[in-house]
Image 1 (cartoon, helix red, strand yellow):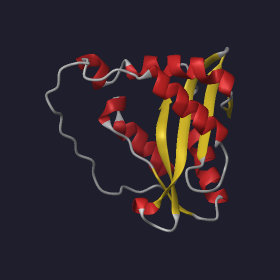
Image 2 (tube, one colour):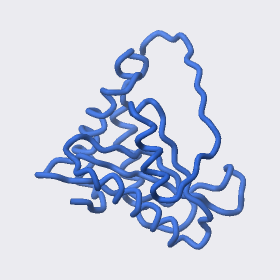
Image 3 (cartoon, helix red, strand yellow):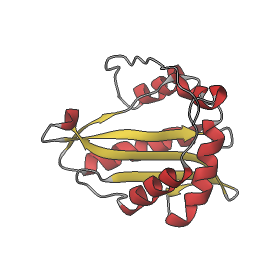
Image 4 (cartoon, one colour):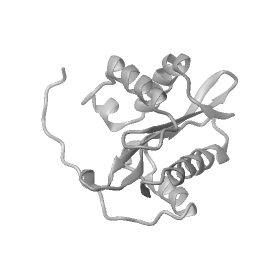
Length: 164
């Protein structure tokens, strides 16, 4: 079942994100850990701004199956190139696990796009799929099914740091 996230879901969402984060290269290498306090604050702020239609508004839905969170779409409305006078809807956290039904990732994406369309100042949806999720090509195909087109590339560079 897909539904709007609620504040009472925050502990379950954090647990779900921790499980998903465990598959990331950050967790596998020990480069960075989840900041649980920050994550809870982020989720609470996003839930309070859910379905608003102005700058910094958020969209937060979860996939729930048998009382367990198995998918999340957290998106925000941000200024185009940070300085523009119009907004774009962009994903912040978009992840599902194997417990989610195959169509549910697509339904989360569809719902987020519809939310962006409801904001008069929003002129586009911009989403990214990185290797941190394991299979960015699969996610890119999902984006393309909804009419999103490739838009540049993403590059990264790691710095040698000691764990904190």
